[in-house]
Length: 200
Figure: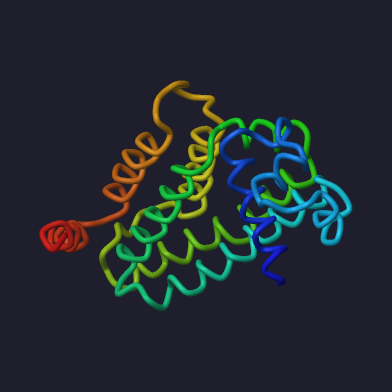
């Protein structure tokens, strides 16, 4: 990807995440890039096409991260904790208005995120639970399919600021993750979590 295009995409992503999509114009994006409006149309036909590109880029990068995370994490707890940390960082950057507007005005892209949840995120969580079982650090009586649906439904509620409006979404998600992880581990897993906490 050309550096100009990369800058347009990165700048637009930051603006959309902070202020929503609808209020940001092509002029706003290119002014923040210190580029001409004509340069925008060398890479994108419209703002809608740019939004399409950003969502596709996000899901592709996230899929690569999920695959990599599996191999760099020493155990299932580490893998899940790394995932939670990355998601918390995303929540820190994205305001709820972004998700409100994506759902309302960009239904096709919202559907892509739904599909990514079903095709990548829930399978990641199911695989992680299987790993935790094999490592004997997760409880053996977990309904892995149900727990995946519960977790990502709660995440969606937090992202859209439906529940507890005005409360920092990152803080809510962090507390939810801690409760979630404690609900997965058995006694051996709890000891590993305590050791990890002591190391931190």
